[in-house]
Length: 216
Image 1 (tube, helix red, strand yellow):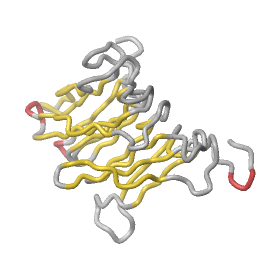
Image 2: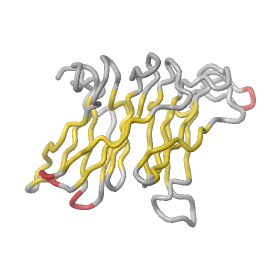
Image 3: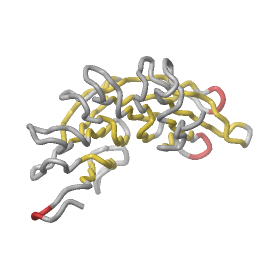
Image 4: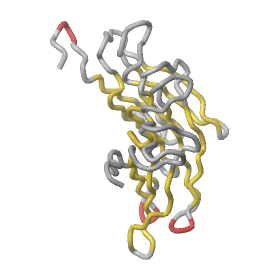
């Protein structure tokens, strides 16, 4: 549809010939509203890339921007809905979908929808997301941390015995108002650890002004 913003984010799930592409459209048609946001999964079927699933939130609202961010791993994709209304307006949410099987017979299931434990209005949780094995990092770059407006933060979630739980909140020790920590995030394995360990996280803070420099 017009202005659906298909391709605003992209993610790869799996490897080799069984990999899938997940391409969100954060202004696309969701389950309840025409501009709620959605994501499309494509796999190679008989040598051609074919849409095999459409991912949406079970509940949502206009302009939730589901699909603003996305990242994939071996069997799952995480998708941010940066303007989702839950307990508060525009607090944001992050959802995990898991794939079983591959090709035309693949089944995509909503595994969990995550919210920041300290969620508040306009935090923009899910502005960026990253997934490595059983670890997710999801940022809220407009989070007011300890009264500091728009300092930004990121939450780390781990999957234990099939359930996702918040493990830690990441903030900048010397951060100031308007830094927007978490505008970008990435996750991987630190040197000397196994792939999928999810124990190395990097967060971008685009308006940080170290040593008194002008915000850039």
